[in-house]
Length: 115
Picture 1 (tube, rainbow, N blue to C red):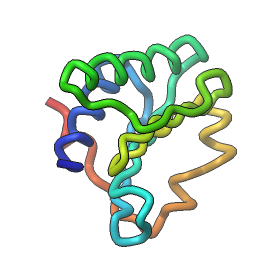
Picture 2: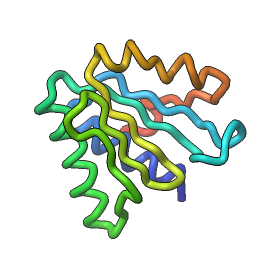
Picture 3: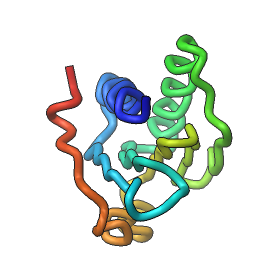
């Protein structure tokens, strides 16, 4: 289920023109989630549109986030239990650098998920 959800999320973000989508498998490192999906938006408006589109498209399949944080901060987090989505403005993404923080996780090739 987690891998299929990751694929759906990546495709929704790609369709909405998210920048630099990254998937990190963290299942072996922590109990908080199986995957992190990290992506950037080009502005606050774009960031909110990415989050809204994810919520809308996944709700159509009766998949709802357990929690959403930060809709006005430059970092929006959508917690879909086994998959946590982090949407950043570029400066916030550079500052928090989750890719480095979770560098022990396995990288999933996003290109293979997009259809």
